[in-house]
Image (cartoon, rainbow, N blue to C red; front, side):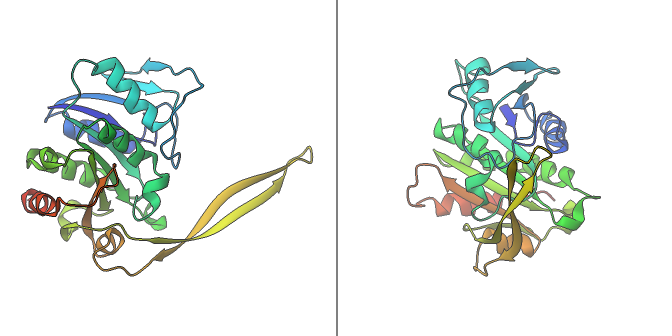
Length: 256
């Protein structure tokens, strides 16, 4: 397979390195990712900015732009004559559950590929605040490798992306995988006001996470029960209509 890897955490993030290491045995890989971290930048693209494609290793390139820029540049620079078989965005340093998908640069990079009709996967490691010392990126990377080898990636519907969230656990402690609906996370908006040395006022936008709404069958519920969540997002906003295909993906997906 010909696989494009990207992310929003930057070219040097540990999640993208874990993907590269695992997927190198299942396909020909090119990595194109932001030069710096671009978390929560959504689906922005750079219309009024010069973008640089900087080589930083064998088949590895950094872009001074957004995650969606990386997908666009990669398609033009390396896949102009023939699109890749799959785009994998991640592994994100944190969950992309519920409404997070609207803010997520990880999901945006995969969504840009899906808009071009390319099968795409966004994969995130669902971390808690207490998980800083132990992040199981390898578990998520192995799951994506199994997802590809099981043939699941070839069943992703046209103009659809697979949004996968993996609990931060060793792979043997995961409860399984579930096909899920999009849930809802609860945040308390926070705007922090600061005054610099020169007296100018500036602000930090933030939000305090307060848990998830209890929605049966949601991605939030699945991850809280240590299941891997698979949500298939139609980028054309059409009704589902492919439930049987996605159920088959779950049945195929095995990492034993």
